[in-house]
Image (cartoon, rainbow over all chains, first blue to last red; front, side, top):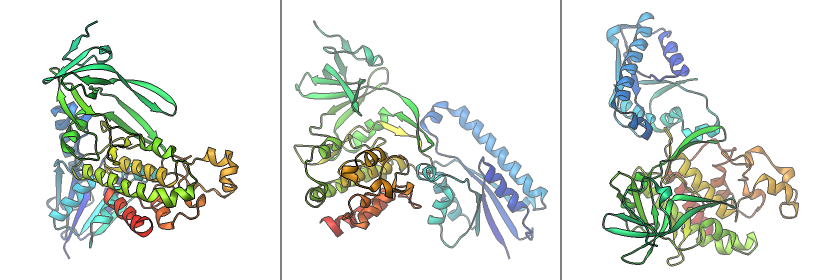
Length: 146
Length: 302
């Protein structure tokens, strides 16, 4: 059975662990299609002031990060032609909105992401991507790895 | 002595009483500056001038560009706050003629500094207004709060108008809501503050609204110090306190008002408890909060 997985890549320990966890699962490598996704966060006012160089450097950095993530999966035996990378710079209000939109645009069956443990106060103020995804996506397997 | 004339407002500290600020085709004579009045302390806000417009002799507030930025920490969460004069200017355009927002016009001086000329909203702020109501809580709750609650819902709906247009108020406090004497409306003022928020862009606005609701329903704030030092009023409540009775972001602020006033309906108290340490589910959008407070209003106050 064909399986299409969207993995959200972020600059966090939990994101790396999520990737590692997926890379070690015993998939039938011909049947699994993986997309590695990074959503750029909408720039804050101060980042806008940093100008184009900052944005360019961020883009290069994340292209490299996605390629590195792809290499990790390939090193565990997954097929290079079945692994795709996607760097999204559309100005979504939040990263969660971006993930939801990208997930709906693709024909994915599973969504994987790392989840950083937060205090309740932090969760209230900063929000929680995993909880937003659970609230907004239905009929989807969401794997949130802490 | 004839005042100096300023078209460039970059050095707002040097603009003083008697000076004239000239912007677009408007001339305003400075009569003083505004003061931040919080916790019994008064700080001058040198970037906010009191003025009279020469052509109309109307009193105005002139807000000059002050790009202050700082970090604040709430319950261990670090938040970057900054003043965003352009945001306030954009909101002034958005809310033109909206009766629940202060009114004014936004300009730029030749150096690109944002200047906002604001109409004064006359009346006590919500903090002072509630503070001056002299009656016991039970009478207040049954006789006065229903009208306050109704007006607060309208004021909260006004904030929803900002949110659906992708703006935050940024500094929702009970002294930034004015009980306008002329109309009886609750009018929002001062929306030049902003804060960095990534995944929950409206969190701090919602928290501010929760505080205003708490202040209204509780007829003032109640904190741990008051509860432990005024046993005449609070009785043995101090023996019956739990951590989860207190605010999620302000550890001394008491939220679980039903422990003080048992006649507050559970449904009303539960709305407040969303802002307490007890809650596992938080309001993420103002629509969720409005739905709950409307249900409370029609169940108990209408």
